[in-house]
Length: 490
Image (cartoon, rainbow, N blue to C red; front, top):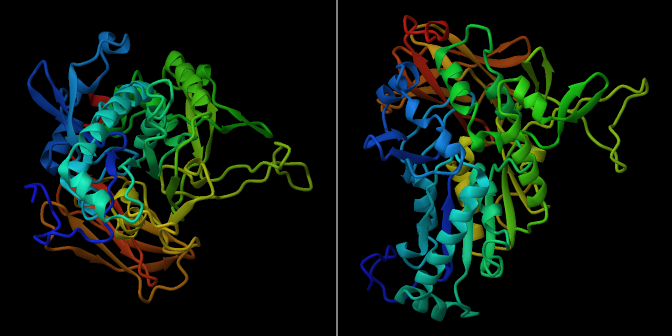
């Protein structure tokens, strides 16, 4: 038996094992990065201590800023070294969770570890660039897998005995990278060699949060981490590729598209925004073979925005269109606003391309980590034609600050909660997960609310379990209240 085999010592493979090769593609900030010029790891290092230093020290994330050479296409200074293995906090994005559980889940469905490719990439770069790299890596991976002894064994125990193909499992931005990789211009045969694409919370039509990040704190004091993120992303092509491509800007009694001049006005790059719009337009013609979406729902999510004086005000609701493309209006001919929700980062309709969708009440990072999402991935990788739980509303919505001050109380709010019995909340210090702090939900102005206090600086996870068995989580960073503020940075 091959030394990589993970299915025990029996000669026969389990019936559920696929002969296909699986490519796991992480989201933005989901790959660890290494600076080749300094020899230092610059993103994805474990531990709250590193996170606090990265977001507060003057040189903390300096290596991640795009250089002129990189903007002109001369890349290689920063190398992606692997998928995220530790929880990492980022302002606005509520943290990125490790992909260990996702990879381990895929491992239970393949014939050998060699069937899995963990595709790490420099998420600062344009999605188009990473798509080309993924196309090449996927082709190399499939060719090598088809020559592997375990591939022949897996084919022999399947009913159809077909040759192995590719299955992409992509989280967030990873879905955009996967779609770019399947552009026939890169590899005309790659689509035909792909059995399926599973996307987990992918913002196919963009996210308002990308615009908020670019505009945050311009001319006003804000917490240092948020301002540092804005400065880092201002010239980052990857972030601009996540800008909303749907009609997202409220303008009087209408809603229009975000323009390159809008992006420049809020602190981004007009050129990068223009490139992103062209890229997304061209991507619409690309078909994702066997595409199935796992989409987070029920979480309050920004859907559109107002721009005034270079500042952005996000809104948790948006318009809907009639069949002729006009906006739905009320009897006074005013635009009606609908709260569609989503996963807290990507609103639901931005993450859906086809009718084959599994809706789960999860936040963005958890869409690639929660047990319910992993169960859906397993069924799809194993070629189940009816993956995941049925569509429908479940769980609850979680709203909490992403940055709090250690030692000071703060509140989290839960939406779509009918009763408090059976609802549990806790706050866990990830450096000491054995001692979670239990929180008591109460009604406050008709909303289920809990008060929490992080006793010391560090990274914490909120866990909310609802009576119907769903768990909703979010990462929160607790900073030293005496620490540096943004206005001291410059």
